[in-house]
Image 1 (cartoon, rainbow, N blue to C red):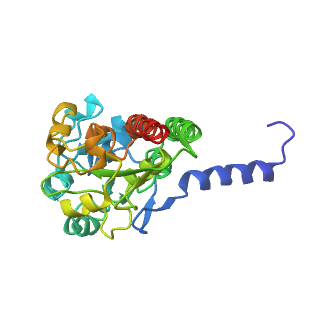
Image 2: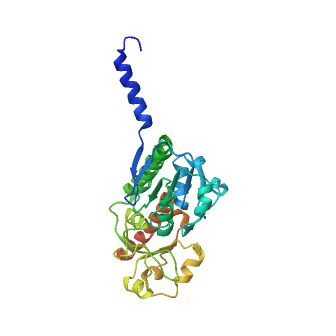
Image 3: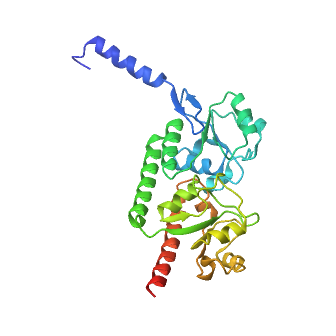
Length: 300
């Protein structure tokens, strides 16, 4: 640094020290302030979607505990489980000595969240409701774990994938869709759910968008009254083959009469992760198939 004034060098050193020592302050999806003094090195994920997001953000090697059903990528299966979304084992969690816990605001129980808050370990709660939330959370996890470069690339790749689907399907004829999470009881999603955002990306119109509950149970009579043009389901008990057979009992439904009943694997559409782009691609193709059939019907 020949020619530099000593005071200038001192200012640079002080600025660098302040940057290193400055704590990271973020607001999570529950509106809570989360402060980290250093990037996390021991992370616990309290939902399968969080586990996937952490891996996608380049911090999978920092996971020391995950929730049950965290099975993607394959490396996640080797990480100790600390309970499911409904009940986390706080004692086992503490034994893992995490310096960051990442949870799911609406998926983890309120009692668990309250218990974890009392532990004094930084707790970041996620609540992805829109496709834009996935790259945002990837970037946040990258900041929390010190893997910003990988997280930024993953986030931009996801945004590019969404933009391509939007370019392809924006402005197409709307198709009225009933989305089925579960059959008995019959459960769907409202307009605030991430799946409804995917429907909108594809030009689908969620027939139960206006219901107040995020994942409401609905009566079959209500589905019959809405008479959707397509039914898309992703229940874990379903398969492509058995889905339409289950709906044949309701031939009054236009979607059933025309064979517009479709299946998407739940891991590709019900987990709020980058893989939802695969589910979105399938959904857009299914809705486009319905659209072509309806256009042909009106031409005839």
